[in-house]
Image 1 (cartoon, rainbow, N blue to C red):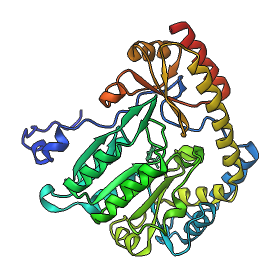
Image 2: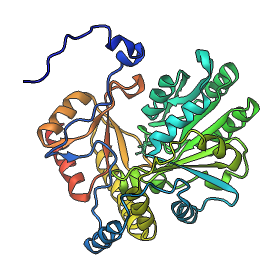
Image 3: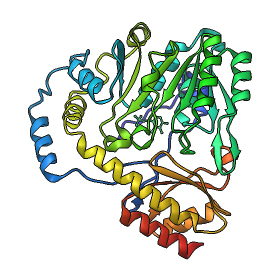
Image 4: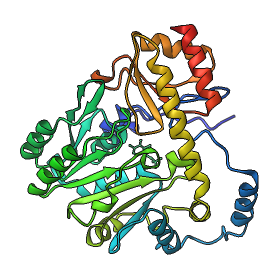
Length: 369
Ligand SMILES: *Cc1c(COP(=O)(O)O)cnc(C)c1O
């Protein structure tokens, strides 16, 4: 018999009221489904490499705390990501944690701090801003000729009006897959500079993109650049990193939980960075199959297929909910973005899977359509 207590109705009221009204981040049960909902790499590691990794991990002292400077991991990242000299890196338990640290670092009492971002963009920017009592201001993207572009004038006006502490520019953007033009990014970065605002360029999809802003870090003193190993094939490992000026990173380091990266993650990522050609080949394959999937989707009449520089494709259907439900009946799980933002009405986000998975997706769409 479990212990029975008299439940005090006021206890839960001690929890923040805004938290009480929130809903948890829902991840649907994907058991048995072809999983094209979360931008995961569909490819496994070669079995030889897996065996080596297993051996490598078995040598880790699990009874010891990590060394909180993570210097080996930092220097491997510096090499592999070609981080410019003089710039520092802070590590997060996924980019998600870095986004939380940023909100925390830029929050002020009384909700007078603002974080600005285009919309639709990555949901965690908003969630973490609100949880840290930062006001979150959005400027809608513009849809032009089947592409989403930054509303540069709108972003600049919002920067002038709200003087944000921080502006997010996801490059490429999730969930649209677009890469904002260089000129539009420059205009926002320059406007932000005039108001002493930082700009965080979130390059979560860099492995599948043509361009990067890493080389521009020394050019603009207000830039920070964030990346993750998740979309490349290590989503389960949880490691994100942010690169920036040493003095800025030093400040954010003060609020990083000292042991936020566990020793297994640390060791696995070091090992993977030393074998990164495997991931490079997989990313290349994903880009090639993205082109095939894109062309096949474009052949369906009535669909708007948005060009993508990431490992997913956003598609607008006449009736996205019906297609989403139909795909589910075919054992395929995608992400229905319809309710996330008015611009995404009737849009599904399709992760680029393996060639076989993409063919199953296309076959199912042909039957449903
Ligand atoms: C997936 C994603 C992230 C988060 O990545 P994690 O490192 O897995 O937390 C950050 N930004 C964008 C734009 C993403 O799509």
